[in-house]
Every structure is written in structure tokens, then in C-alpha cells.
Length: 563
Figure (tube, rainbow, N blue to C red):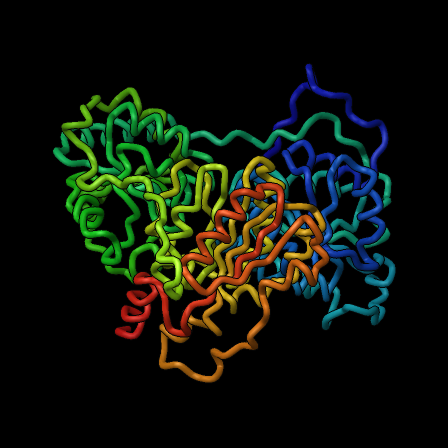
């Protein structure tokens, strides 16, 4: 990846002195990173001292895995996120979060401290070492797009620039290993702001592709758009919305791309998940005589365990670097460029000519049957009615993200899900990152008790930073998703906690409260309390029967058992 450096005109003054740490921190700040998440450790303390002196805010988390999840949630909304750990015990603790970011195309920068260079050269057996000094770097090379050891202050600036530019352009995590004696090592200062090279499409290929795609779409009687996860990752939502409104084309999204466009838009068909879709959604997408598929990943959960029936000959398949139309490939095309070229080429249609067969409507108010015991179906109805466009919903892998497809998320970028990697425990710490990336939005975490127990300690950080999250813990006494996917066993049992007592345990004081509910009326009242306290953390423990779940999870279990 090449780096374009501007001539400096109109930019802020560059420092005359720098260390490897200050160089890296300045580059992160230039790229929009205002927070770093992590856990201190002796090999990274010199770097952290310079973080504290920098404009970036340090956000300490309860463990490194949670720091990675928080940085992931931050990066999804901010465009770039960063985490800091120490060597060995810290690096391997955050590994799962980095792997998830790699799987889901999230631009995350991991900075790991490391033992001093002299001990590395001597092969000394220092604490936190695993096998040899290269092992951690080698492992992270497998789950990042680029990784580097910053062991030379002369080459460190170029390596930092290369990795950050790659992270931004590829939307994938990178790994920087910083020996403790390099943190304060003097290096050349930045001479100008870092500007990653602007990628562009091949002009001839782009024109030919745009002409061919426009011809198919204009000729089609019932075309449709399928907006996939890469629309979100590459920030293409506004451009795609312009295309939708210019040509009046109906569109669907997938679980991984839910809320990339506003779901109350009149052209929104619904969520497409193959055979799991609402019948009207499945029929309109699969019968389209021309389907513009933008950045869609045909994963198991996005396709209803591969229950799709889409004729590839009718698809304009737009990937991150190329387009396929029927049997023809158009290389070196960026999806954003193609969208911009299509807008003036597509003939305008009227809404009456082409529109969703069964448009989604806003959710009505939840009316509780006050004394009735809470069920999963009614619980999700109440949550759906509680959500508004001031909130960002984070749906945990499990019953939560099986129920979420039925929710109408009114505005764009109000929903976060890790649907492909599906690491349970992701959402509670990710809510920390989401709030710091979008200070005006209130995070709402919908999580099962099993997933919550994995990362529950991060409620402590939410309390400490006065983040007014709403944490909805579905207490169904164990790993419900595993019970539904397979014949139940004792391995799905967990200890019953008093979840509603956690805000008090974490000394929330007047800044937070916990509420335990067992009936429809109690849940309705608890949600009203949360709505009336927008500056407080509210944890609601929602008690339902052990095997009670959403229709989506029952469908998933039945499908998986068929093989």
C-alpha cells in the first residue's frame, strides 16, 4: 500500500521531535481515533504514559478480551478503533477479539508491548514469553491483514504508516508489536498528515460494467437491491440510498447488514435470510429478474443455513474489488465507484411501478397483560416497542440475534451484530465502544445469561464512565441456543446469578439500577423506568422459562438438526 503525503499547505504544524510512541499516537489521532481501550502491563507502561500525555483518551477495561470487543464496537461506528495490551498474557487474551474483527472486516489496530530488544536478542527467558520471541507476532499474522515488529526507530515511522493505511483501506485489523525500550526511542517526526492512497477503479472496466449493469436494471420488470455487509464496512450507505431514491428500486438487507439503510424507508422490503425470510421478502428477492447484490456475504446465518434460491444469471454481484454479471467478470472496480456511475444511468421509476410487496411498518405500542408471566415472544415485543432512533441496539449471538430480524430499526446505523464470527459475550463490552464512538446514542444490549456471564464485568466500566446503557439480560437458566441446536446436556447449565444486583455490586450508586422482572407488567414498567432515566445505566433481568425462545431460534435449531 502506497502512502500519499500532502504538501502540508493548510495543515497543522508537524512536531519537530518525536518518539515511536508519539508518532503512532499522532497518526491514530489524524485518522479519527480518540480513544484507546486496553489493560496495563509492564511491557506497555512506557507507551501508556505517552498515551496519557496525548490527546487520546485511555479507556481501561476489566480484561483484554473485553478491550478488543470494545475497540471492535468503536471501529464499526468510527471507522477505526484501537486496543493496547501487554505481551503474552495480554496479547493472547485479546486474540479472539482480533480474530472476530478479521472475520467481520473491522478496522482495528492492536498495539502490544513487548520485552526489551536486548533481551530479545539474547534469548533471555523473560516472564510472559511463549516458546520464542517471534511466536506472538507469527500468530497475529494469521488473523490480521498486516503485522510488524517496531524494533528500529529508523524504520518504525514507515511501518506505522504502512499498517495504518492498510487497515483503513482494507477494513481489516493490523498488529503492531512495540518493545518497551522502543516506546520512548527518538524517531523522525511526521512531515505531513498521513493520507492513505486513494484507490480508484479501472476506467474502462468501470464504464463497461456500469453500462452493462444499467442496461439490465433498466430492462428488468421487477429488479431489486440486496445490500450486504460491505456496504456498511465501506461507508456506502449514503451513496446507495441516493441510488435507491433516484431509481425508486426496492431493497432488502441481511442480518449482518441490518440497519445499513433506514428500515422505515418506503422501498425497504425487509430482511432477507433465504428460507427464513418472511414469505413476501423471500419471494421478491428470489423472483427478481435483476438483483443488484452489493457486498453480500452468503454465510450460513445470512442465508438461513444456505436455503437460498437465487439464479446467479440474474445477479449483478458487486464485491469489494470486482463485479460479476452472469458469466462475465469486471475486475478492478470499487463498489462506491459503480454506485456513483449507476445513479445517472438508471431510469427513474415511480413508487407505484415498483415497490415492496409487503412494506415494513413501525412497531406499535406494547400493551402488557399485567399479571401474565413473561414469555420470550412477549418479551421481544416489549423490547421492540421500547427502541427508538436515539438508541443503538447490540444483539448478542444466540436467541437475541435470532429475534432481532423481526425488529424494525428506523434509522441507519442503529444496530450492531457479530453474526458471522458469533462470539458470545461480544455485546456488553462492544456497547462501551459504541457509546464512545457515538456519544449521542444510547446503547441497548440484548444478551442471554450465558453470554452475559462471559463479559459481565464490563458493566463495571460502563458504570465508571457513566455510560447510560440499557442492559437487557434474558435469564433462561443456561445456554439456550445450545439447548435448541442439539439434544440438551448438563454442559448447558450455568450458575444462577442475581443479575439485577450487579449495578449495586459495582457501586453504581445513583448512576445505575437493576430491575428483575417476571411478568409482562413488570417488564413494561422497567422499560418505562429506563426511558425516563436517559442518564443512568439500567440493567433489566428478564426471567423466562428454560426452553422458551424466539421463533427464529426454534427455526435455527430445527434447520441445524437436519444437517
